[in-house]
Image: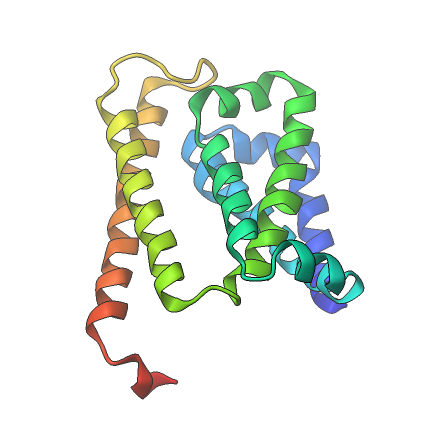
Length: 185
């Protein structure tokens, strides 16, 4: 129950207009800090939903694949430059961002992650490595503004943030796959 309250508190504090405006004023903070924190708030709230509605998760997310696919679709949607731009100009999109990232990405992520095999988790990490590297190259090499609400330098900074994240995930994948993990369990 404490995790749920922390998740709700985090969700509400991120949704407060001054906090949301501050976090959305810088493109890289909007994408790489606010959005993951919203997902994390849903991740924390998921424990209560899993205990209250175990039949739902058992029926629809038995092996974790449907939930992780929903998580991937939501995360792909929110890396499209136009959708990120619309959250700043259309209030209903801002509400949809918070609801979709917390409840359609964070909750399924928590339920699915423990059900996936280590090979499945590595595939997800590899997918996000490729996706982040591709998005980074796109944001760095595009000479026009992809988001009307941000400057070109913000876009380039976000691109380097994506590339850095991809490199960090790649280092993690190499570490996990080339070390004996049984020594650490």
